[in-house]
Image (tube, rainbow, N blue to C red; front, side):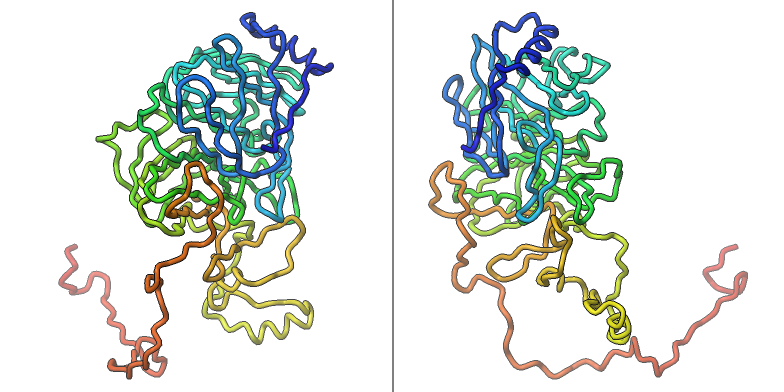
Length: 465
Ligand SMILES: [Cu+2]
């Protein structure tokens, strides 16, 4: 793991400790646990539990799980809220706010019944708090700045202590200057595993959070005041082709869990399978009631998990079904030029702008293949290549790769699917048939159209006035 550790026993540690003891008299420890940080957006192997009940740990796409330490019967974690640099896909980084070096922050994993103590150190230039979305806990641990606790001022550390009442799918995010702090990328996943290791157990369990950013081409910092017109739709603050593939062995029971902290809903669609909706942030859907879907909408502030048995090998697309959410930075005021002959106009424009390229006369697919000059730190609107050519996607798109014979906990990219012979759609190369129908007259300009005019109040049989 490329985790590095920070030492909080220096001067900042002393300040942080005063902050912590001022809030909770119950902290037995003389020291704050170390806060591991992550330097890059590489998926880390699942953190297999070494004590307590057994469980199948989750895999965070392009992310990691926060290590903890035991202190008596408390599981102790340390989150640091701070400015981070997040690579959104190779070729583009964003200057965001997050936790422990990345946005989203590390995934927190624990077990139903655990007593968790979470230290939160604020290294942002403004105050913050953390709300534990979906957890049942004492009101004063709920993390709503001003309402349930004082804000955590810059440089201070607060302590949250609560016992995990139930297993399930949760998240954490600030409840202070929310519009700015969530638009800057502050969020993280929180998975509580069942005490019974066999309950709804799967072999592979993937998690991601959805966030939307508005980062102008060439810029690094999101425009936080944007309400609707975002240009980067992300899973774990990554866009296609930068989002990890979801790799599973044939026959595995697989769970995919996600939460939505954007400003709009995301219908998440997976190809090749039907799946069962198994869990929400409110709890487990009883197995007999888990309903089948191929697309599950996730509204703002909701979380969803679905389960399937990976019995169909292949490279199966998984994506948001809103077509504008599978694109990267673009202008939204493009005209539709389909059917327009721009040749004459292009000649004139090139006298002024020699590089001018007329586009869009036959759709926009040419943008998926073309290498246009882009501003620095900007991703193409439609991009990515697979074994048959340009994928013409961006944003919320990835691939579920199901293969035979993968070892347990092997999440390495297995490459593109080797299709069985004769199982790929193919070009028909026979002789074209002679036209059997009469040519259409629908667009024949030589014929005049006939219109029948019915006078208002006339004798039309449909007139019932
Ligand atoms: Cu979407």
